[in-house]
Image 1: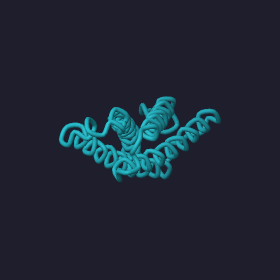
Image 2: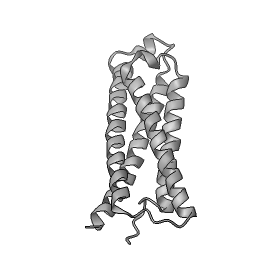
Image 3: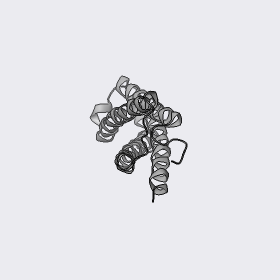
Length: 155
């Protein structure tokens, strides 16, 4: 059995999953408290994907904690394959949502000056939420690469 940092069933894997949950929840809460986010599809898509990411990461964090508490080994090729594909799908979705939101934030703040014209828009909250979404993606990419490295080491 290879011990790879961030792989399923390790304390570093739990830390990655919990940080994904925290960043996803913070991004969603930041976006929801702002005014006018639901009028734009990119922000609504990012929120939906981050809620899915939160559920996925919370489930895997609980699965990791259960396996650590009961001394179960999660380094089974079938389980790791499922986790790798789930992480890849979520990583692509989160990156797409964060990129779309970032382009909308740039359009609002730099190109059209919507933030100066419409002071009711919470542009600083949109920026913070998008930054947190990219942090979710970075941590998700790290956990998916460690699980992929573990999967490759089986063969």
